[in-house]
Image (cartoon, rainbow, N blue to C red; front, side, top):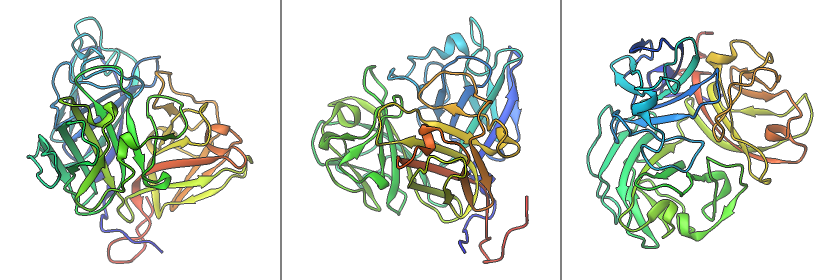
Length: 358
């Protein structure tokens, strides 16, 4: 039975749901000062908005997971943005409307992660000195800002003291390059793109066919991860027992689908089929679901679609999740999938005693 070193998962990851007001709207209840905030309008066909402490919570610092835009390509001055506070964030009003984060009457979800509670400092472990690295070694999460040099085999320090299992990277100074993802289940020769349905990409120009270490992440010379003089933001995740799990599974195409063991009750799950280039990035969380196999309130990381509430998709359980649909996006017969999951609550506490039911 898995135990955890993090008895209260909500001190490092938490989901907040709220209704927009159309004017400045301070939201509390996250439980910590978030360093990475990912917001999606659940009611309408609006872009995702991702902001972090390293690039600062400021006007035109937004990125969107459903596009290849540069930083500020989604206009936060026009549509509003979040500013982190000690227990959540303040959603600002845009000059035209606040549809990204705070339109009156619209429903929103905000996924919040805790890194180092500051921009951090330069990490000099790699051949490229990072501009900033904000690190939380307890939860295995760091945010990394760096400038590329187009050198194959370049490295950047992540500060985690453990090998990252997932690294998500985006060029921020110009548009046109996709989000690049390294996932350990696919190996160091393969990449995925968060903003598209594309299946696996085999290209040494991204990760230089080299697995990350406990101190550095390897880069190729591709413009998606290491263009010369280009600026990049990266999110690195090391797996922490009882808090995070990054793995893979094979679907069975049955409504009585596979059970995926995580060792905790998931609070957030993202799944992508990687042997086909036609499926989306599916996201669920335990706050929007409320109870199992009843709509499941799914969003897509690569699309601006409103929340889907008509599909009985998954059960979120105390120690993992079970697939409850024949949908090829996450449970096609014989199809292959990767996933990321973060805990709402651990299965077993740090003292090796089962946690109280929540």
